[in-house]
Length: 109
Image (cartoon, rainbow, N blue to C red; front, side, top):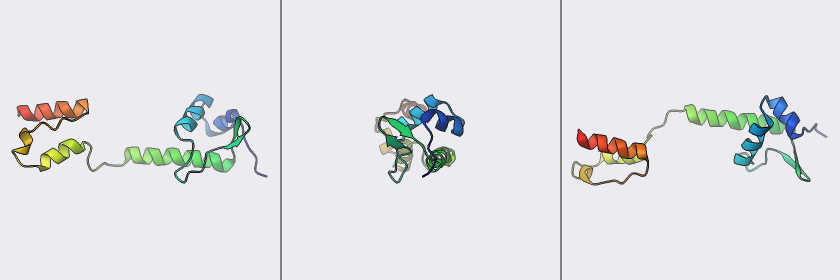
């Protein structure tokens, strides 16, 4: 039977706080395959070494996605840029404040 850790020991083993681990599990209860990052035993969560490795891998994947270049940061502006000159006069009504500010700045030019 594999060795299991409680949340305190698992957090210590990962080098994070218990609070960080609880919040991570609240936001990401399972990996991409749908397998929980812990084993529920009663009202407690227990972690195996493979669970801890999967938590680290999930964080690595999240960081990889954050660092990867994006093709289109603001799809509303990109779509608007590709349209004809007449369509540029229409209000696209972007929901993002920053995108609206960019649209207004572009209209001044």
